[in-house]
Length: 249
Image (cartoon, rainbow, N blue to C red):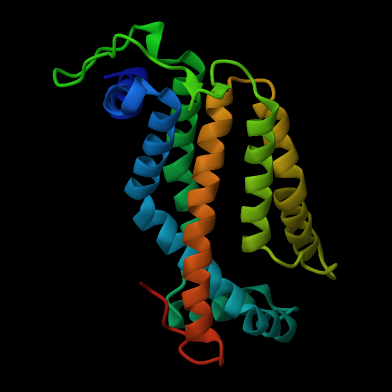
């Protein structure tokens, strides 16, 4: 079985059918509402992974003082430094690689959704499931206001701005200049993620159908609300410096 066939059957065809089904379900067959619902559905499916990744990120932030102390204490002994770091992560139930795993989960879905919104519902070439029927009429104007088949600057702005808000919530403070290359790279990545990425998303959104912007905005709003709730709960658990191992649910 080829990788293309696996990709089509595992990702593209199910998501395409889900979008067609939701479009036929919503009032007026508004594809914009269907995109929002599909976005929420996808976020719910990957919720266990995103939630665990967020908890890990919060724990890593709380451990920064101890991590810095280990780096300073063993700055001339890389092997011992790595050993102490792994002991610290194990003690607090933190997997520093969970972020990479989360990216591996989300990236194929993100790419598939991009392709789906770019091609649209009516391009054909994808078999529908027996219980899914293509609506006779598909409204490409979201709530009768925004044509999702062409770029829209307002939705592009919302996509970029919502990404900025999400990144500011994740990284409220840009790390200060470090004394080594690793710290400088971390600082550069934080700046790019907070300020450059939203601009890139805005630019991309102005070049592609507004359906992409709507998806990105919906996804960012969902992620921001999720993160705000989790961080609020974590603040109650960690606020006094106690309960380091809490916040797992």
